[in-house]
Amino acid sequence: MFKIICVTNRKLCSDFSERIKKISEQNVPIILREKDLSEAEYETLARGMINKCPDMILHTYIGASKNLGVKKIHLPIKALRENPSVRRGFDTVGASVHSAKEAREAQETGADYVVAGHIFATDCKKDLAPRGLDFLKGVCESVTVPVYAIGGITPDNIASVRRAGASGACVMSSFMTCPLGEIEKLIQSFRRY
Image (cartoon, rainbow, N blue to C red; front, side):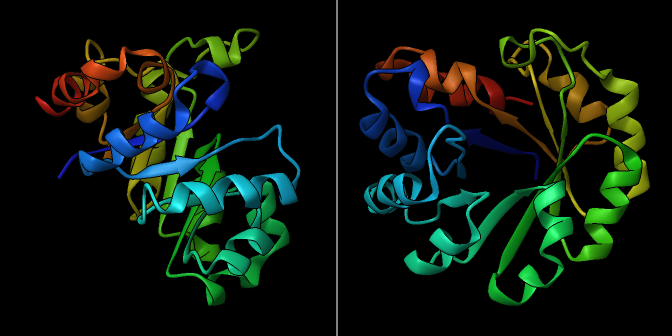
């Protein structure tokens, strides 16, 4: 089944807590990715969000995840590389990768899935050219774990992501900026493929 995953950025909205709850109610997995916070600040935020999204995937901070008893973690490839035994403490480990080589490394280190990007132009990476669909296809062909595309994914281009072989897509901006009352409609527009 082609999966849509929400990646957070609380700075893009003024109703973050309510938004997370609504997205979670639509059975969309959520990666709490708040890169500007210290680990202590992140842990405080995550503690409040877990009640709204009990199936949340925490990002980067292994210690905070363990303190909170969260068994799903998503790591940049560098953090996975530096913590190869992380697999033992978590039920699910994901990794962000930027090449087929990194995807293979993540898989060999024990990642259950990889997030590859950025695929299309995105405001999050204004200064970097997108890697494109051929890149995504290459990553998908290089590993047996699920590959999720990230970067500029919209309802208009999601079908091409699926055709490239991805198991799903990670979406940030549209989940964080669409009107709160239109979240369900947005999710349906992504799921129609």
